[in-house]
Length: 253
Image 1 (cartoon, rainbow, N blue to C red):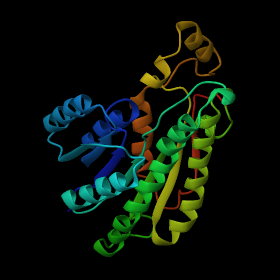
Image 2 (image 1 turned 45 degrees about the vertical axis):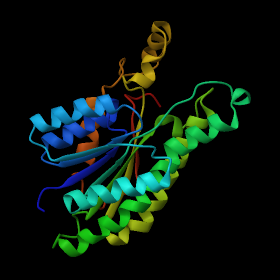
Image 3 (image 1 turned 180 degrees about the vertical axis):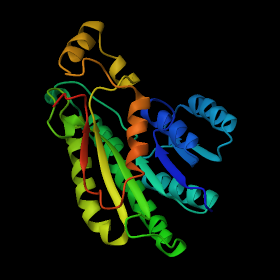
């Protein structure tokens, strides 16, 4: 029971996979899920096994509230408790708003925003139990929720209206939920990422990637490992750090 548990959505690749390995190396048990890439979950399981990390990896649709709740509850049952929730799962869509179908819009909003709501709703009762299980100092959070957001949730992007709207909603959810849960000792923060070198951004042409790089004062994309390191550090902060949307963008905005 002394080993902490992290729950990560979208854990098969990119930021989610980097988080699973970073938290595993920090001594956490890992619960992770993804939508379809069970082959990548299998390879992640091999890496976690090599690290000696207890883990539970599932595949399913997080936009389905029943699966989200089942995943959270199975993780809590498997490890006895939950400590850190990382809402990372998400999709992007690039195109004119007038060309978006209802299905496209609903997919982005449900994948990026509703899934985080479902996981938070299911996880909060488990996080609250930590207050009774632990005799912790006021500055030590009894639970932590970290939402992986985007700078486009802080300043909308052209041709990414649905993505920007979903991340702006995630930022507002972060700030609102932080106020709701602060009296219970649960910290809620978001990391608003800039351009991260993941599959989502590798779809751009070399010319587009070069233009993006030139617009970033740091003159480079961040790696998923850097995002994971930042999230691990946020998980170690006092409970008084809550309700923050922290930009991680190399000075982009």
